[in-house]
Length: 423
Ligand code: RNT
Ligand code: ZN
Image 1 (tube, helix red, strand yellow):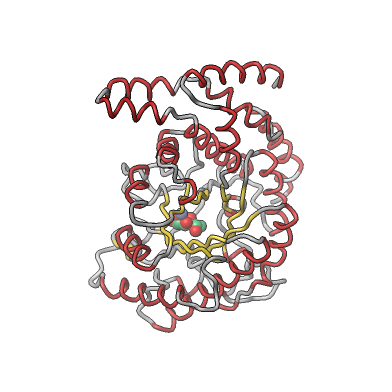
Image 2 (cartoon, protein in one colour):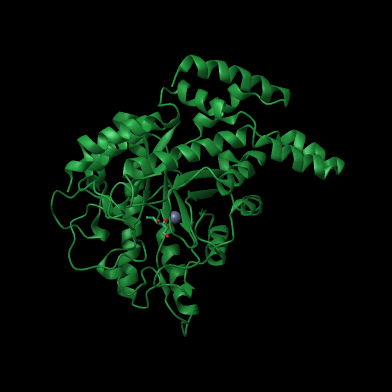
């Protein structure tokens, strides 16, 4: 694409937005500065790199599709992230799962993981100036095969997973020290039952006990390790009952001063999360958003620049709540080029952030106060056909990332030169 034309188009777009009192230069700067934590698990279909012992169920997490090119080693994954990061604009972080540990070919069980098993990740990230976030892995492990982990009826199994979470918080604190800034840790467990359980009470009581033990670890600084808990409505194999439901975790997080994670795919199929932000933030101090796209169920489709995403970020922008909301992506598709999946989802996320910062919020609120709801609706509708694309192109130009669909050529070449050789 011709960058001279982009400049011209941007100049005209800037003038149009200015008529509405919107400063596009400022919106671009702001949109670029908001950190988005990219998930590590699109590169390898949520497989991880640990050396495994024993057959395991994946715990309801499954990437479907058989596109070639899956990253088979941490080095391959890092090469993939390196490329992705060249194709997406703005401040990025990387979210690593515990099962991406590097243990030099040795079996190290999850409760024995240490910061040194993530030393290569930390070194690599530091060199790139990339902040790391972390996740304990409570699935795809023999001790998760019953479908219960932190809420398991057997105290020995619960204790194992408590040790795992504690080990993960120590790793996160080490990451925070290495990068000189906090590391967010998201705790998601698959615990639940396929059919009507006889006892919904004990697993929840067990979970509370386990979580309290995890978070009351005096050895880990809560400013280095910033915890979140993620709820879910149902999973494959936990259709009827999920121990960590929305109500459970909202109450837990609030009562314990822990962060709450909202995944866009973890509610009823027609339920979206944008309305929840201003409700939770009346009481909770921070939220983590898992940017995902459910298709009829919690399918984790590649994120697109659609209404759900726009409404979500508009809510954060209108509430000026960016400092209370952390953003991380969570999707996986094994049916398309995985680099492209990342780029599409991450660019869509940044696009929606930019879009939300180009909102005539003050004017909309004024119309609302006047009772002029037709003007409110009319203006919202007109915003959709403003020259947003020209502002987005300028944002990409400012960061020297490919314009428009130009990144497809880069991804295509990488597929030919690198991905197609992984079999
Ligand atoms: C699962 C949750 C969870 C996972 C990752 C891999 O339903 O969304 O966030 O996707 O931890
Ligand atoms: Zn999630």
